Amino acid sequence: MKTSPLSLRPVTPVIGAEVRGVDLDALDDDSLEAIRDALMEHLVLFFRDQDISIESQKALGAWFGELVEHPNEPGIEGHPEVFRIHADETSVRATGERWHSDVSCDPVPPMGSILRLHTVPESGGDTLFANMYAAWEALSDHMKGLLEGLTAVHDGGPFYREVNRLIGRDDGGRSYPSAEHPVVRTHPLTGRKALFVNEMFTVRIVGLPRGESIGLLDFLFRHVQRPDFHCRFRWRPHSVAFWDNRCTQHHAIWDYFPHVRSGYRVTVRGERPV
Ligand code: SIN
Image (cartoon, rainbow, N blue to C red; front, side):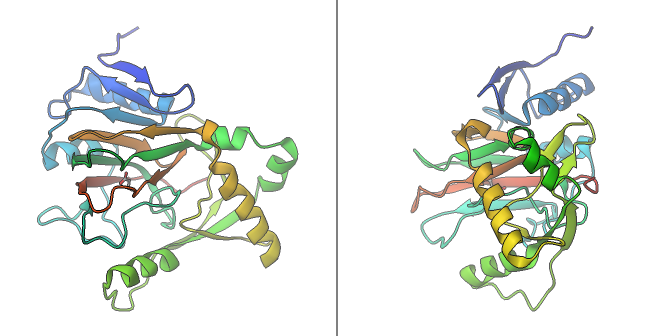
């Protein structure tokens, strides 16, 4: 058996691990395979002191799959698949302030996202991550039986239009992705089942009367908030987080206004949820 080149320190027994012993600017195949294995086990990985280039961040993502452009956030100059995550004293909102799986409204939602922050506030600006395998497994057999086989509509329009309205950006009447996904999906690599609805994009459960759909989604959105499914990441300058969107949700906390929090995210294409 090969020895892993990484050293892993779990953040909680349920989700998250801090990875040591790796330089994201100089990755070889052994390290990349070990990162993939660790991601499958811990769902989100955290790396410290990685003052890496945009090219290295993209190369890490590209090893896992095709990089994709964000449907609402323009990419940075010369790198359309990289967008800036930034909040400061002029901000009226911050990215990711509700529980979500990135761009789940896409018919082929992302497998993962890699965020590097170069500037962080003295305190605050943490990100919460939740384990969607654990959220599924904690449901009763009755509830699992009800949810298996159901699909839900994930619509980017309401959320992205609200973002644009808040920041005063004219979206020129563009349309946004919308897709129907299973409420519980099977992860393509681990084969485990994960709950796949989130309060940012999931608007209704298909085939249920409106009141039942609202009630069921409301229960599931509150279920995801259970702290025993979570870990909380405290950023430092040049920390990197890499999460698997197929089995996690995250929530960025904007408690640091008027201070600056800034960095770059790349997003990796996944597969159609089944
Ligand atoms: C996001 O990608 O949703 C934002 C995460 C963060 O800023 O911590």
